[in-house]
Image 1 (cartoon, rainbow, N blue to C red):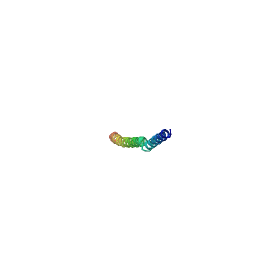
Image 2: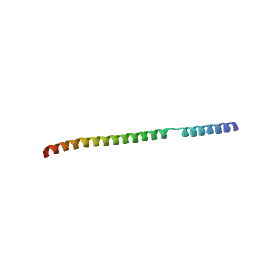
Image 3: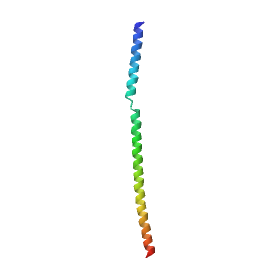
Length: 74
C-alpha cells in the first residue's frame, strides 16, 4: 500500500516537473514575435518604397508639365 502511494506520488511529481519544464522552454511566443517583427519590417519597407516611387513619378510628371508650359509660352 505504501509502495503504491509512493510510486503514485513520484509519478505525479515527474509529470508536474515535465509539464513545468516544457512550459518554460516553449518557443511558440518567440516565433510569433519574430513573425510580427518581420511583418512590421516588410510593411515599413513597402511604405518607404512606395513613397520613393511616388516622389520619382511626381518629378517626372512635373518635368513634363514644365516642358509643356514652356512650349506654350514661347
